[in-house]
Length: 305
Ligand code: RIB
Ligand code: CA
Image (cartoon, rainbow, N blue to C red; front, side):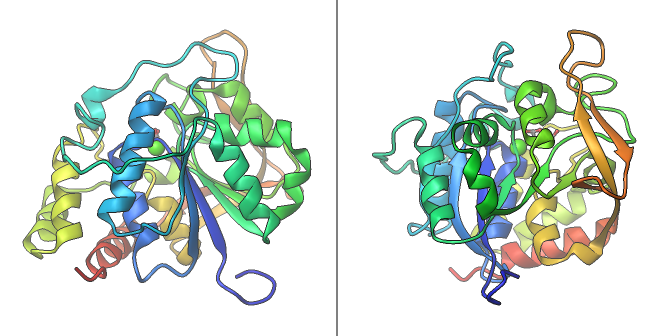
């Protein structure tokens, strides 16, 4: 809750991506306990043109015409861009769900200007659920913005479990380790929602079928996307972020200092978490998967029309 007792203002930075799409549904649901003040797209699961298109079409589908959608970074700070992972998120990044695409006048790179405008109006909770390139550039170009960012609640990293791209690296960090290093080095309060918890929250077929059988517009769309989500674990990585914002009690963690390995080695992109009571990152390590799945389904099915 913001200092004046109003609902927290949240910006989600995403690379839709099926699990990003489910996270946007949860954040846009009437039951969300926060204000979704903006959505920004970053290159990651797919190139920026695709993630920006998907973010716009999703927000239009959800009826959130009042939520600005802007485009952020098109390529990592230093490393080569990562190849699109259509084999996981489907040919269009939404598991094959085809949505109308609204026109946009937003230009590339307008994400940083938008985040600065929202931060100028008051405290913001920044929720990156893709590579951290845009957030890193924001902190580098306008370091003073840190005073307006209450905390960064991110999906990314693997602290005490294996990675999902290499033995040690999780995709969002691996896709731009240099950007992740900027964010984790910044003196901003962070919550790291990594594979330590998200891999425990799988979307099983029965749970997906229930979304469809509700004969609900958002539920049917979510089921369509999830049936086209070819992640072995079917992990609901990104939706853990909006769920955490409303129900942190579903999770537990430990305060750590986190550093990112940016050396060209087998540990490239590793998020190294050292328990530290003075650390500026709460690393989540435990979760109630059933509670998170129930929260996601209830949020999706709470929308009217
Ligand atoms: O490792 C999982 C993360 O990588 C999620 O954000 C998913 O969308 C992919 O971007
Ligand atoms: Ca993502």
